[in-house]
Image (cartoon, rainbow, N blue to C red; front, side, top):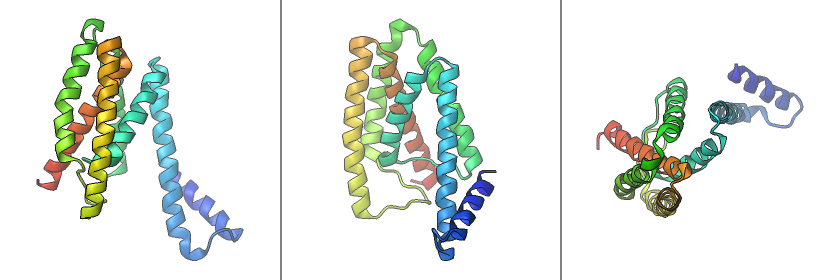
Length: 191
């Protein structure tokens, strides 16, 4: 359905001479990817809304996207598997944040942050077959991932330890999840 919508839109752009016929595949791929991303994020926000955890969902989307973009890790082989894993991920993160006993939020936040930190710091970036990195890119991504890691870790620990906040817990869960995705990516890459 999204593919047909993207194709129809691109064909209209060609018909109105907005894009060249030679560029149809590129535009169709880009538009389809953007539409899939929009559906993906909208469905995650819907989950957060239905669980009464929209602010936590927004924190998850921002924090996880920030670290994931530079640290890399496992990527599913198909869009369907990616979408399914994303649903499992968002549900898991939000349900853990919701049902974590108030007295243990600080401990869980600290444990997740401190166990994920060395994994991300040491191994970032983990490339995948769809996006191999050259040496300069690896150096750039590693520096960025480490800076982002330090900021997220500090915010998670401050929010979790000082304020016993679910927002800190969600940020820590993002780090734990990213460390897991990196380890799975290393395993998939045979490293």
